[in-house]
Image (cartoon, rainbow, N blue to C red; front, side, top):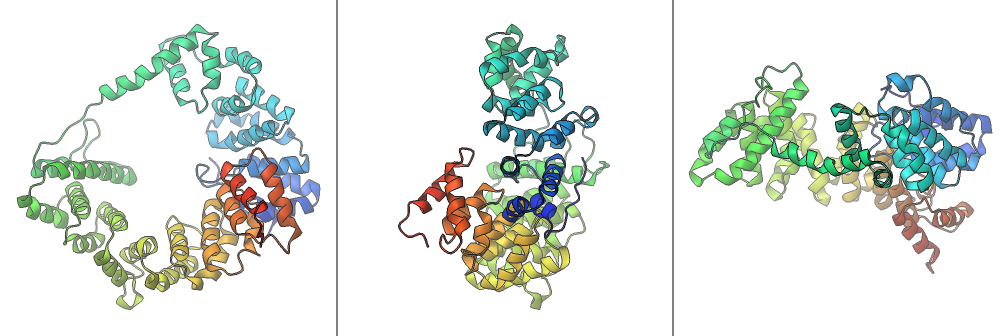
Amino acid sequence: MFEPVIAPSASLLGLLQRGRGDGQLHALAADRAEALAALEECVTRDPRSDWQVENRSLYYARLYMELEAPLAGLEEHLHDPADIFDQDECRTGLALAVLGHLAAYGRRDALDLLRGYVAVGANWAWALDELALRDDDRSLLSLAPAVLGRFPTDERGEAELRAAIRAAYEPRPWRLWAAHHPRIAAASEQSPFDLWQRQLNRSGVTPGWSTADVLAWADQSDPGCGEPGASDSGASEAGAVARRAAAAARCLAAVVRPQDRETLLDAALGGAPGARVAALRYLVDQRDTAAAALIEAAAADIDERVVTAALELLGRMRGAEILGHARRWADLGTGGADSALGEAAVQLLADAGEPCDGPLVVDALRRWLSVRGVDGAGLGTLVDGAGRLAAVQAVPALRHIYGEAVSSELRGRAARALAVTDSHFARGIAVECLWDCEENTRELAARHVTTTGDVRVLERLRRLAADPAEEAEVHAAVRGRLTSRDRT
């Protein structure tokens, strides 16, 4: 899958790629040809890093409607020869979702494109899910022969058909077809039994019923998986160790006796990776008094698997004692703030700290931006922490993140933090957020925006209230503001 090039945030393309509200506003004011080109670029080259947590389809569909944009570019993209060789659903998923919204808005050409793609396209299942919500029974019935033709009548084909029925996000077409096609009816009836059979046939090595047995089991491999240290993939091996250790920790909760504590402490301090992580998890879950010291020791280990597990476990810990340790680890004065343990400690303070921890979180947020920019999995936690702790010193950094973040999910978190830290939010950023691609951000804006002084606000609120494609939460927030006596 290609990595899209993200344009600067001040450009029209950059705004649309990010899904910012200003992107829609600028597109409507820009030269139409330029706006259409930028919009088509976004839809055919999905700019999202994670489509499962970022929304764009309704945002782009609304702009297609506003610009009365033709769909020739989307048709060319869907039927490109690359569709045969690159069957990753991310290549066409956004275009199909946009067509689904356009079909709901009454665009017959979008409906026809989806029907045609179901018949010949590689990502036909996604297109079918879009049609399931919008098309009529007669049209759906006409697609059944083309879909059935994708599955040979041999044993493998029947298994693939059952898998397709199980994986369908919207079951309506399959239920409709089952009444007319015995093959689909039979596959629909057999599909649940396939799942039960797989669950019943699961096999693997199970631990004995003592603390020592479970710790030894934590470092074993399932048959056919090789030895823990023999994998060519470090990430795969680390994941396997973590999964086995998590299962072992759950077993420990059932078998550990009071006299086993020393065994667990020894394993957590210097055992083999699986046993060490399992013992650490158990001791952290039990809030053992030695857990903090063991986490600190594990975070300095040379084995990356142990370090990763220790930092993840630190994030799950709560209580006054661990917060005290976290403040020491996160403080620049102690020299630990730039270490992996120091960063994890700040993340904990952002999640569960007290107002006095605000300066530490803000300092960490500024360091993150100066070193890594507006990117990285841990940045969202710091943003949330700045908002939760009402750290007004973070406002400049949060505004920077809001404007530059490629991830619309991260931008929404920055907006939520600004809503409680920035005294100008209601008259500034909240106005733009009414056009944002994320429904949570639009809902936030509807609840906070000042409705006087900017003629666009009430008009936008009324349009959102009347749009049947809008989410129920946004409708509720918008209508609450429109019917409120106090609209300030």
